Image 1 (tube, one colour):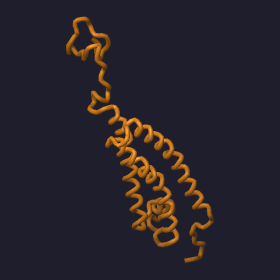
Image 2: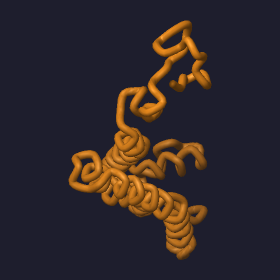
Image 3: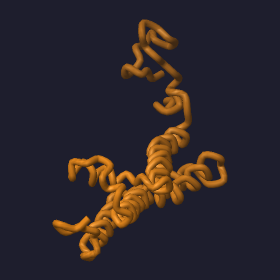
Image 4: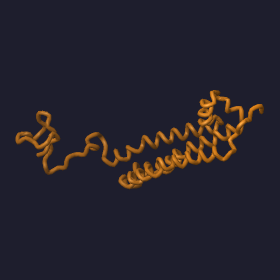
Length: 171
């Protein structure tokens, strides 16, 4: 007999004085099984919050572009001191919309690729171990590398010398 607290005392064959014991011939239940789910379910559940967060972020920030109040415009507004002054110039709104779409792109790609893999693993259409391995690979491959590429595209967009600026004395 083995117990959760170490080797079982000779007299501890059942639940006794805080010892959690089971026959030596059986395998010890995994932590995942003791806490309410299989190891596979818990491994898949690890990825779900990130996928849901990215989906929500993508929808909210994408909607800001669709209603022509892109999130990056507010960032520019805080830098210039006029939170909504950028809205007066259609070129600035267009630029902020493009920058915001570049900001949203990594999250959207992640959701579009990771969501179906998670659903396939959760529903049983794909083995949970395979789904977890794919999700881990996608998270590593789509995490920082894709975000860095997105920031590089933003810098390129801003450095093309087409940033709408109004010279002094112009309306």
